Image 1 (cartoon, rainbow, N blue to C red):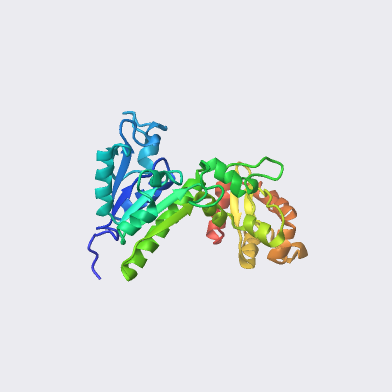
Image 2: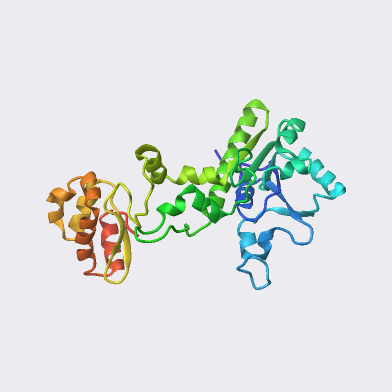
Length: 318
């Protein structure tokens, strides 16, 4: 089939009430795929993120443009009846509405998601919040670090002798934006089949629970509190950051075959027959001893040299 150059969401109109990061990130991805996204901003000040650094030489915010490229923007006062009436007319012609106000705010404006869908049956309304639209925490304010702490993500980030640590990016906001994007695409596909729109409820806390992986497995299956283990993998070895002569190198061996190749490349063929390292389970049990053996070899040369050798051997390294 010959490419036409069109994008998959061309013809879809999105009204974007969102601000700062989670919602704007979602709406930006929709714009990237061809949707017409009309961002609504406060008269006078605009999105809060316009005041966040870093800034371009002309004083505009890099943060703002990072998640708002490809959109149109309209300044409105949602408490002004004329502006609100304009927004309602825009919604009537839209396919998707996205908002990340605190739950209940849209209802106070007369724009409750469930009412909008009743009035416009093909409309998809996506609400993003810290803790969801219902439940005992729904009205509580949330920022990324708050949700990272409550989810337990900070408890599994860092080293065993250190304190709980924030992940080095706003993963709670970004994950919520990604889950919202996927949910909207799913709802658009369902609308193609049924002709009906829907409401979507995305919570930042839910998103981080979904990404916790082994931390959540430990809590649910083993009934133990997740712990910090540094850079290593909880159940695969060697799968860690290792010291070389000049700097650290990440090496990941997820199979027995890769481990054996690693041993040969490092000149440690004797480790292949060491009972402590015979299987992945044994290597995980004895990961500290294995790391010491590997680092004795790795510290004989620089990281870049080892990287080239390991890459040539087909071993994942970085």
